[in-house]
Structure formats: C-alpha cells, structure tokens
Figure 1 (cartoon, rainbow, N blue to C red):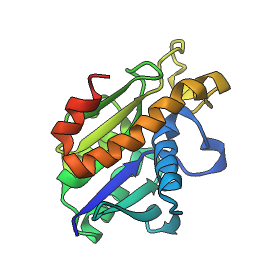
Figure 2 (cartoon, rainbow, N blue to C red):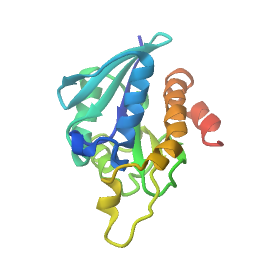
Figure 3 (cartoon, rainbow, N blue to C red):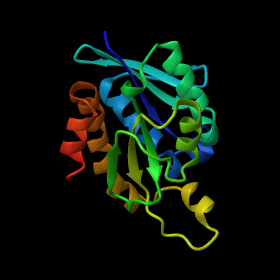
Amino acid sequence: MEKYLIVGLGNPGPEYHETRHNAGWMVIDSFAAEQGVSFEDKRYGFVAETSVKGRKLFLLKPTTYMNLSGNAVRYWLEKENIPTENLLVIVDDLALPLGKMRLRGNGSNGGHNGLGHIQQLIGQQYARLRMGIGNEFGKGQQVDWVLGKFSDEDKQTLQPCIDTAREIIKSFVLAGIARTMNQYNKK
C-alpha cells in the first residue's frame, strides 16, 4: 500500500489554537474529522492514520513548534519509509490574501521558518499547500499578526479554503501533484 505523509504546520498549546500560524493544523484537523480518525500524541507530533482508496495517509501535526518542524517531518518520513514526493505540507502564508491558496510541487520557503527548517533537513523537493492569512499589520507587527486569532469574519472567509484543502489532499494522493495543481491553482 502506497504511503503518504500529510503535514499541517502549527504550534502546540491552547494559546495557539486557531491562530493564523496554525492554519495548517486547522486543515489537518478538518480532514481527520471528515475521515473519522483521531490523533495520538506520538514522537514529534500528533499523528492520525487513515486511508483513501487503498493509499495509507499519515496525518501529522508537529509538536516541535514551527521553527523546528523539519525534525518531525524527517522523522516520520524515515520511520514510515515515505518518499518525499509523497509529502504534502500545509502552511500559512502572509504573501497570500486571506481566502487564497496556492499549491506548489517544490520551491523556496518564502521566508517561512517552518518551511525553512524542513528545507534544511530534506531539501525543497516536496509539495506544499500555502493557505493565505493576509498581511494587514503595521511595521514590526508581523509576530503579533501571525500569532493572532482569526476573527469570526476571517473564519467565514477561511472555511471554504479549508473545505477545498481537504479535496486537494485527496487529489494529491490519488492524482498526483501536477494534476492537482492544474485543477486547483486555477480557482
């Protein structure tokens, strides 16, 4: 059975729940709920297992804190012997407006510390789904912005993206990155 690692980046702890920086965790939580699976506290993260049409998915929410996300990603890739082309990382992105998403098969970390650490440890040849969180903050306010909570209005804007992200995960494992990008990056 082919295996995939689907990672939602974020930070552990109630103070980070539903903050902009935890958009990746929010997607993974939603996907796990749809699949009817729950997370177990394991090495370097919360892990749930499910399958989609004969493909085994490991859902990972790293508990290493954002800046050390690569430790969790590398560990689970190696532990389950999953090739990097079967890795999808879901991450918040300041450069995209809230309500926008972009799927890429590889690329730079775009200044994102979580992606930067993953890149240091495994390279940049892996898929990433960037969830726009906007950048409506003043000079020097970036940390407060990304660690700030989504407003109720923001959550209404974000929810369709979370719903689409669940479909992207399924398409990624069933159809591959190229076809999934062609289908979803046009929207």
